[in-house]
Length: 215
Image (cartoon, rainbow, N blue to C red; front, top):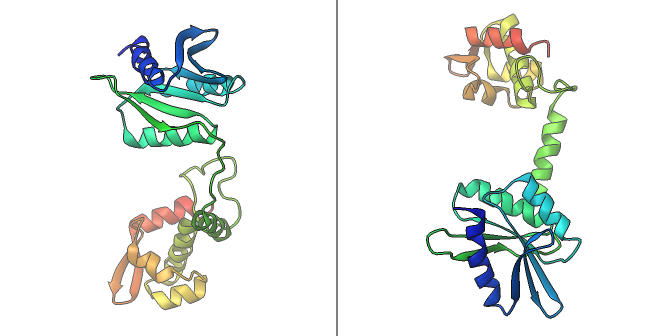
């Protein structure tokens, strides 16, 4: 599909709404006019930063600006790009290649994102759980350190010193409330169940302690 193939379906779509439509007007790919109502559409074969830049630039002319791309591709990527377009006040159209069907996925409008209390709480919790600033300047030499990994390191350090221990004891001495759960889930392969409620350190755990113990 060529970029020029997007124009006839887009033009027909706008004409059905009573617009007079012309292509390549000034710097705009498509301009539609219905009285004082002006619509601009920028055409591209895929989403890109350049396409969003062009769309935002056209908002200086009219509030009714769309970006149009061929239909198809990864649904997750399309959803993310539509979300981005909405955030900057752009509309989104797609054109189906086999029959020229135009679908409007978003209309241009001012956008005010709704805050997610759940995500806010999760971020604050992750911030408070992380001790110090282990990832300053980017990842550590062995990767990103999370609060969960820091808790796992504290459990591993205790086991390295005291040997296999009951989860309750590790929880009490390390002050890691989820110590038993962390060792039972064994996300990193650092822990092994020695007997009911008792956990020890694996060779992978010894290596993990050496890698992350000083971060």
